[in-house]
Length: 441
Image (cartoon, rainbow, N blue to C red; front, side, top):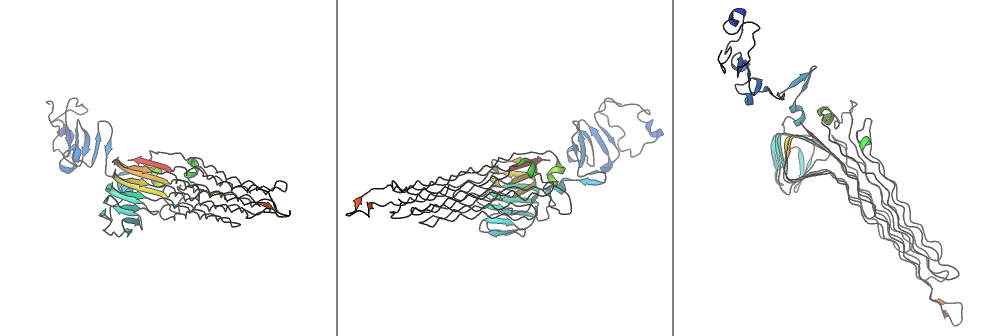
């Protein structure tokens, strides 16, 4: 047989008599450049590209194995179970869409240029224009072909509010916590914690002590939680400012203001990148009937209140020390955001950041982003940054001391020192960064 000659072309079946037309039984072919067994769509082909079937050309074949051992197939069945990219990237049943701020879709609500998922979405192709935001809201986003993001995709934590200003004998209340993100197909995040009240100033009686910041709470971890293995728990809130000292009975001077509260500590979370399809798919499945592992995360903690103002001079105070301002509430943590798309072109932002803290409140921890894709390109960013923390609550003003000794005749001047202002609460560090999980399939 000449080099390059087709062997057994269009012969669907071979028997011993037909073998004699070509090679002898058990004889090897060592120099043929191409082989074909069978006819039409059922033919098995082989050449320098590899082995394939189902098409005349290697690149068009639904099944092929190249010379490096890389296999292409539409489906693989192992022990009776099917493994297919269709299950990862979705069916595309929700069609093709472009989010431009004007169009409406059946799988998301719209407010201005912000769209919010109302269910798990299974798009064939999705484009998000510049200036448009898609809020995932606890649902998963599947794109069978190409996701082009020129705007923003996010599920960020909510911000805590500032504490209130303190007044004379009326310390400021702490700020409210950033609300929790509700769980849907994916788990959300827990709420932050309210800030603590400021300290209360007074006359020469005792100035009130600033209250301690409330402790943060950990995420609602469930059985087999992956998050507990690689993320840090929230620390306690910072202590509020101490009481201002009383005026002394000997010097009649006003007391010192209270110190500001210190912040607690939250350890940073690590990041992981698994290379296992089974892990990546199952870890965000919320089916209650199974024992799969889930992703959850933590919120921040309440901020420190400002110190109470120093008391006025002993017995002869003109005004009491002012109340310290309340510490701000902490932000809630970012949610779990999952995108499965065959091709992701990200020229915008993909975010699951922690909510910012109010005055003195810590920002919430960044959330968790899971990206499963065939290709990831573009100049955009993927961020799980913790929320920014606010400055501490303001200390109360010191009380004014008496200027004269009223018990002498005539009154003699006696310039006592005023009470000092309470120190401000200390701003804690920003929330810890979250976790990014990427899997290329």
